Length: 292
Length: 195
Image (cartoon, rainbow over all chains, first blue to last red; front, side):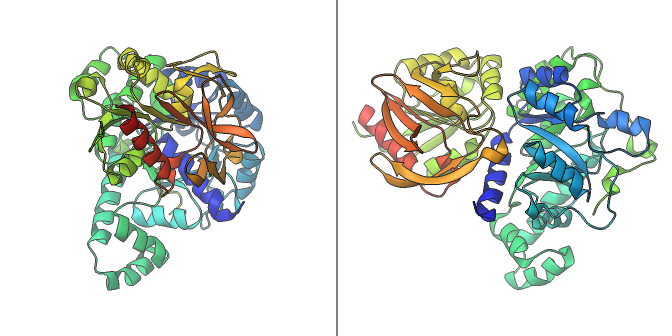
């Protein structure tokens, strides 16, 4: 199969996940709870971001055995994280036939300059982006899905909102540029003219864009969807809360009917304790600054 | 009776529904999204069940109270077009899953029959009455067997990938992901012959 076909198929899988919620899970039991609650995919990892943040130290790809246990437990797609730039970890995840690799700032970066050349892989990659330039650089490297880089493990939505708004503003700006201005703008963003041209012509990214980082409530999910996210990742927000199954199902429904405030009001009732949040001013480590 | 502008409801609880809407609109249909019960208050000539995750869509159909009303409409003969997850929702037997959903289509379907994402593939094969069409299979299901009365419309490597049964058109690939409009046109023609 040609590389171009494979890349199309990988972008297509992200299209199938749209309007869905991708949930962080650490055990097969959690994966089953997530699937039953309506997760469109699960992210298998040893520790959820809130615990990674609390534990400190170097955080790496999860044990392949643990990931395989989750693959066996559910029928929905299974994603897993590798460190930014750590192509050997990505090779391992491909070898166990993961459905999507998240080259993620949640783990400690393995390379402070170069991201993985994702074009060399057959399995798809999702990458985080704070703005349009970052998104297009990751797409140039072969990412077939983008997500915001909201601050993981904080339960604070402010950064994901900032990234989504910035992305929308920059897309609107490119869309209104004269064609002769696009060449220079491509240089400013450090990406190819073709990608900038695509955004100019289509008024959107060439791949699916999800919200991630800090989503803790159905209202958070609805906020991100109304701001233009095509789906939502929920990390620590579910299994760090009082009633994971109920909260997960409520977030899933809120993503489907994200403009129906009456329904979301009902969904938000009696969800129990939300995850304990940390405001962005209170954290020492800004993971979103990893990888540019 | 020929319908000049068919009203098509697209199930929009999760998945790639916008892609279907875009194609159906370009073919002149009036398209609306079905996200909750009140969306069914209007008349519809046809129903599209898009690709996505069948487990998610199945759960949301029940949670949002859409399941029984849609099941009734399909059983009463509403022209229905299911792709990938939509095929799974229609089948009356899943060989590797204890669940079934609408169960109106007498066929046995295997979920994720080609394995994980690495097994996803692209092909171009003959579609009955249309000719060669692009076929994108994403973690696709397979139609293992179909009962009598079910018409096989397409096969890939001798495996059934598209069938028609009375009011239902069910396909394991994603015609909504390619620029080719002919499979959707086939569905619209199916609707016009139905009324």
